[in-house]
Image (cartoon, rainbow, N blue to C red; front, side, top):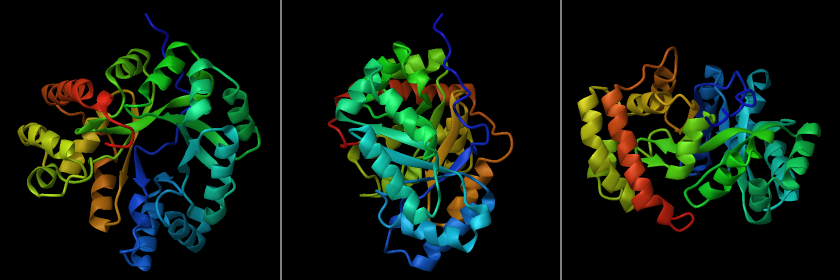
Length: 308
């Protein structure tokens, strides 16, 4: 039997729902409204996920934090990409506008030589631990895409990854599972902790299926066609609840990250992610997982980087 992955490196207080801040960078939304929704999420006491890549989201968050420094949330921040020096620079660029001293959980977005070092157990491990010793970052998870799955697979199988990271973070929702089938099988066998991103896959499944242009890519619309009947058969009233329950039906999942700039949607996420989350019925969950295994083999692992 394969050794189980250590579980201690994921913070115990990680909220089951994490507020995603992508939409806070949308300048078509009035600034006071964006600050207001950030304050609502702060008041809820959940963790936040953010990045300097999200437009001016960091500026918006900094303004919201300044209004109530006693309730600044714990943070997951994207860090990349090709060297430890770049990751250190990314850390500094993120914490400065937020007015914080550290990142609680760093999302390692690895590329180039840094990715190879991670896979092979190289020098990056000492460099990244040095950033922790410096107090800039608490813990790490590694970001996974279909086109980077082999890097993380190699690191886990060889026993290197557990020396540094507490688990994996990737798109995981009823329409997307961005870990390749071989990596997914190892994650399940070794009980590697997961933070599931993009909770609702970009919108309501019926809208993605039926409204032209609602799906970011054609493949999402095609998958919505297959998933909508499963959702309807489940009897779950709301797509947001279905998606949160899907994520937390998987024993490896510790949290799901959902982004919104609407108060009603935030309330749905918070309600679905509170208390004891009921798993989806076994047959419904099995149908989704079977679709994802087929999609991964047919589409995901053949995709060009950043095409999904």
